[in-house]
Length: 254
Image 1: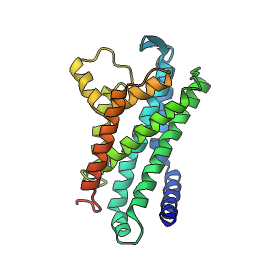
Image 2: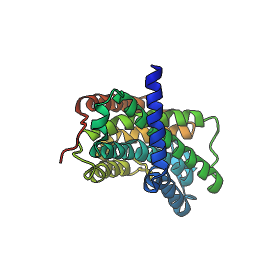
Image 3: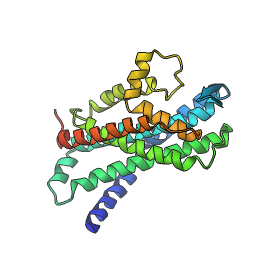
Image 4: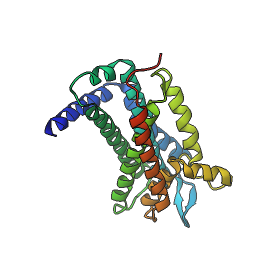
């Protein structure tokens, strides 16, 4: 077991160095959501919206929702893209042919993605506090980050599941963005959805992003978290893990 931990840590160290030495990866994984938070808060932050019977500023809403977007970018889009790139470069095939446990590589990738998501979420809270007058209750933050970590693990499982269906790294960005952004927009991440059609609300509630966003926003404002939302997230996480275990491929389709 100690040997496995050492190998996983070595992979984690390499992934960390590669990430910070790649400016585009660091930007889209960490600073892209912060850019959305800043722009939306500057343009609309002073407006007020109702959240579960309470009026809050849009800046406060965006701090919570952009934390969700940061985790989606880190634990779904960027995680899947990184694994696709390693697969196209032949690293996964070579890794499988060595005594190195493949599970150590996968664990390192997932752990790093979750850590980046948590870091980006923390920066969202810090920027909201420092520049937009958003003062979250410190008592709520432990639950907020616990929910974010749970959602990040679910999205990471879904990323591993999607990797098996993407033929190669060239097709990855188009497929991943086509999956991500429509779901994000209908899930109330970029703006609150109060007047959406019922069928659209029902569809979004069955997908993983809306329950994740609802849970984080509720935790951020000290409101009760829906058990149904958590169960939906858990179901997606289990399904993603099972699909990933059966469909994961070690070589690209040319």
